[in-house]
Amino acid sequence: MLCGQRYATELSRFLRFGLVGVVGFVVDTGLLYLGLAAGLGLWLGRVVSYLGAVTATWLLNRRFTFRGHIPGHTFHEWGRFAVSQLGGAITNLGIYGVLIEASVLARSHPVVGVAAGSLSGLVINYSLARIFVFRGTLAGRHDSSGSGPGSGRGS
Image (cartoon, rainbow, N blue to C red; front, side, top):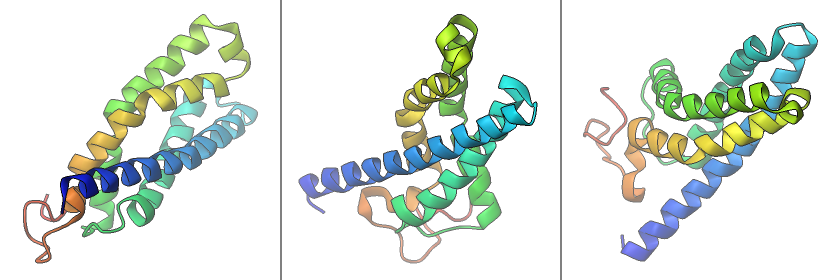
């Protein structure tokens, strides 16, 4: 694949990842507000909403963003995705926490904290998902045998 095509493919993938992230943001925020209505509070509600968002984004990224990858065992892949997203989650939840603790606006409208946290984790999340979960799509190709180091299996 030519270098320019490779960058265009990667940019397209990153943009799809971002669009999936928008859906994840809606799921995250919706579940947070449902959790708040159920009395879970700002922190437990956020943990529940984050887990729901991670699951939704894994499913969508698996089928939409990284559709050419060779999937491994579904539960293991979800686990790798959830773990790979911890770097972004730490950043995401850290920004959220700082804002809801330091800002009356964010405390009154938690969506502000969720949005800032989500944006802060985007690049970290993409990079880690790309390298550790959906690695079978590196450079737009994969090992057709399903057993090579970039195949997404055996790890």
